[in-house]
Length: 168
Image (cartoon, rainbow, N blue to C red):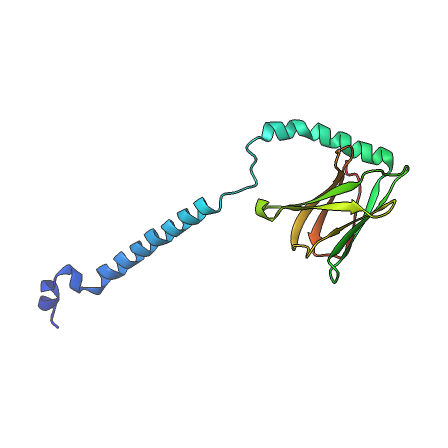
């Protein structure tokens, strides 16, 4: 093919315009996918009512101070074979709560949060049935139904046993 014939060919018969159009189309298509992904997977970390949560921090600290005053400490054991989660509480005085709530808050994904209600089995042992511990980084919160005290821990699951204590 001579230079004269190359000059005579229309633009769409050359390769280079199609490479440029292809790269630009790929960029537009990729941007569309990123926008759709960003809309579908919004960031759950930011709280809408941050002011109310800030005010509630003092109540949380009071509950943790109460747990510290009571000398509370919780040893948690998970038996994966039986699917039993057990908590042994130790305190200065006897604990009379019939049930406890153990909440697992994932560090970044709100849809991975879950909680377990533990039922009193003996004076200081509480148990619940739990199929499995979901792996990940979690903040744990243990409290009775009346929310008088609270024990906290930060944990990377899965593990077989851990301890919760008042964190101030």
